[in-house]
Image 1 (cartoon, rainbow, N blue to C red):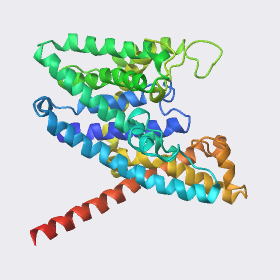
Image 2: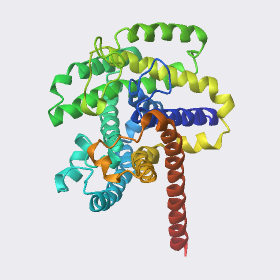
Image 3: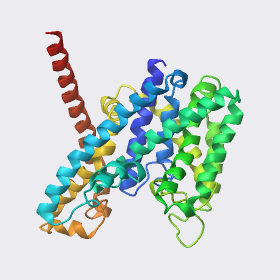
Image 4: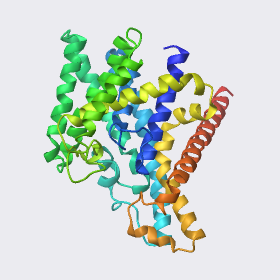
Length: 364
């Protein structure tokens, strides 16, 4: 992959994480695409884009690599936020999580990932690990059967539609994982498909495509209840809990949303490709995902303190509740993106220093 492609996908990752954070603040960065109408599908798409055929013949290496990159930091963050949660509970009387026991901190991460409220956005990480492993084995079998790319994408599309149709069974923990996995596989393959069969061959980011996507999304919007609850279905869906209002619409709005995000990156890239902050944001999506809710919690505590309001008023709301959202939402967004990005920069700096010191010690 060329440096340009590397940098573009990095900018796309930066946009994807901004969409996640803005979604948790209940506003949309892209008009016509409500919060969480495609945001997580975009991350699965990026994972598929980065998937390489060589992994098919090195399954053990792939699993080890993904466990090290995804699961190890996940459990390190869980340990860190467990300590923070206990401290907050001592100060405010509110434990932001489920009871501490072996099951909730070893098995629950792979079921719903909501053992701790402060780090609950990281539920996506174990699910991404599961999805990538299943994708690897299924794709390997499809390769052995010598299926072509169109049959493959059709097969994965059917799995996504099957997932949305299974939403009545989401209350079973095992079925919840099945629903999320089946849905995600289509977007992982879509990323792989785009990278290998579209990117260098077809320009899909021209204004004819924009016109067509706007027409499709406007038709989908006719069914939207996210802003008019009295009728229609929601373009947003809650993947973590397997909640879909319709069978086909979540798949379609995910595809149009992914295209819209990539179109923005394609058009803006010449102007932001050298922006250091976007570069750091794209490189630290994991840390931003892990830390942004805690940072928002701290901002809320600070604002409550400044206003002379008891901080434990937060206890009566969910973890995403913020102080005076009409006035402060964008303040939260900007400050959270800056602090969570540079928390990642700092942690990576510490990690590099640790590795460097260990390497020098070994060499001695």
